Length: 256
Image (cartoon, rainbow, N blue to C red; front, side):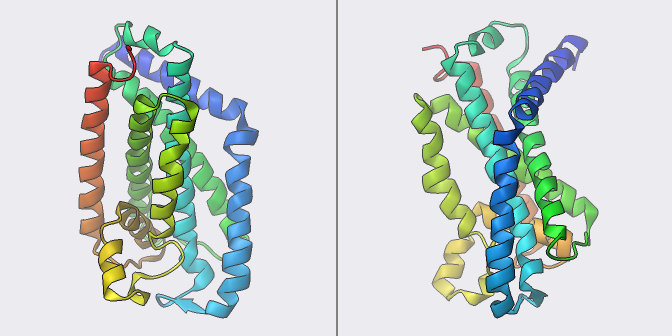
């Protein structure tokens, strides 16, 4: 990477972070309130009746899932809305005609989205500490699972923004695909409770692997082998990254 590419990457990422912090009441506070309600209702009220889940206290069990859910949703939402706004305002054209390579533009937007996901994840983790002790069993696994999960859904959000033609299109995927996959990805339950056909369906859910990788990092417990989770996450990151770069290079949805 030469100096001009580094400056371009830093500029795009800094603009994204400045946007997040400038409207922090919309980007950081709502997820914190939502997750607090989840902890109170599912962890406090329902969890006291559930007891143990996967050999862990129910409140402790749902912490990794709720943290990863907030990271995924906010990484996806940040880049999809930000890049579509750039399309809508037509200032994305200035980036396309600039000397900055396509991968720098993509990495700049992804970096901003990942940072928002991490910021929200840290906030949710702090909130979780008010409800249950939080220990990190495997720090490297915890950090890498967060980075991979946030990157994957940042790339997915970018692709969504590329094809979106109006603001309503940005909300279709989170509403009809992302939210159901998240709730069915083992946030609130262990896969061992499901019948065989439901377990097979869950194994086809990529979010299930991300949540379990993060759960292993925090609690040392997972419903799937760690190598499977990482293999799938790396494949998704590679494929989505290649697709996003191809769309950006061809100007799909951007130069029309």
